Amino acid sequence: HSALTQPASVSGSPGQSITISCTGTSSDVGSYNLVSWYQQHPGKAPKLMTYEGSKRPSGASNRFSGSKSGNTASLTISGLQAEDEADYYCCSYTGNSNWIFGGGTKVTVL
Amino acid sequence: EVQLLESGGGLVQPGGSLRLSCATSGFTFNNYAMSWVRQAPGKGLEWVSAISGSGRSTEYIDSVKGRFTISRDISGNTLYLQMTSLRAEDTAEYYCAKISLGMSGIFYFDSWGQGTLVTVSS
Image 1 (tube, one colour):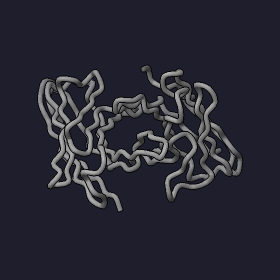
Image 2 (cartoon, rainbow over the protein chains, first blue to last red; image 1 turned 180 degrees about the vertical axis):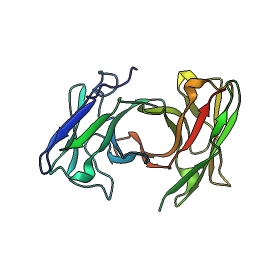
Image 3 (tube, each protein chain N blue to C red; image 1 turned 45 degrees about the vertical axis):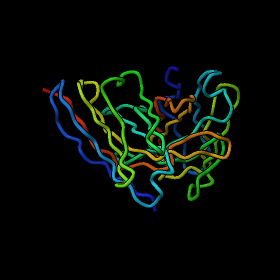
Image 4 (cartoon, each protein chain N blue to C red; image 1 turned 180 degrees about the horizontal axis):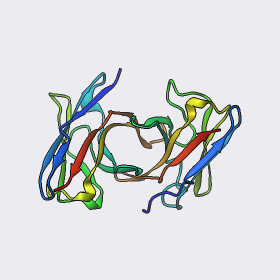
């Protein structure tokens, strides 16, 4: 499995919606709901935002939603806020207790 | 509240060894698989290793196989990563992460520690 492909950066104005893509193959992203998404602010630990494609952990904002089409998973942030400015990583479980991450996307709130 | 606290990072020469620890609390340690994930300076996340709740099953990324050993002390609620034959490319922040199993049978990292920095340099 090679690293998943994410855009290096995405930007939007406060209140807008943005979508971050994560492209893999039929063996990882395209196979069932394997993708989870993580938010990481500078100097901080990653934080789980969505898992199993579209589920949110307790405490996560409902402005974050995950989806998938074919071999591409997406994370949509609606009602963009200044606090959403961070790096975002997709991650796919590949089986046998192995995972691969995307290269990360820097979200900028204009 | 789940808490994960890593320690043991530092500066080590190429070829040297280091043992990382991750002290855990707030959950039943032996009920959950655990993992180490690293992040080189200015780079993205990279999964390194995982261990089952019992400790009987382990997995590693190819680049660390034969050099790193993951283990856990169930009585002490602590996760370890023994790193040997360290290389410059192992320089990274190392995070321990708790693994959860979703209703659809998919594993994901639901809690993370704050990380410990390992620098391999002469």
